[in-house]
Amino acid sequence: MATLSGKSAFVLVLVTGVVVPGVMNYVLSVVLGQQMLGRIVWTLGFGMMIGVIWYGWLRPLDFKGPERDPEEAERKVKD
Image (tube, rainbow, N blue to C red; front, side):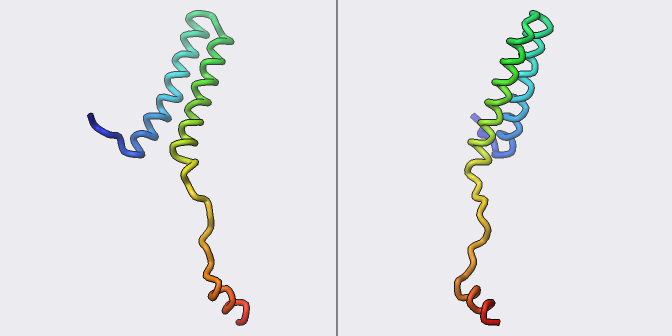
């Protein structure tokens, strides 16, 4: 079985999270006449995609700035 790279997995999750709920929304809303159920399915599917992207790719990122060397900071204050 082939493994997916990080970019490929991200694109697969993104496309699946938009296409599958969108098609289900169309089928439920237009074909079967269940507009509210179609909206619920689309919202839950899209929301789950956002959650997977956050958990898999955004949560692990470390958004800290670079740490300053205390000695360097003291030298700049003295100058």
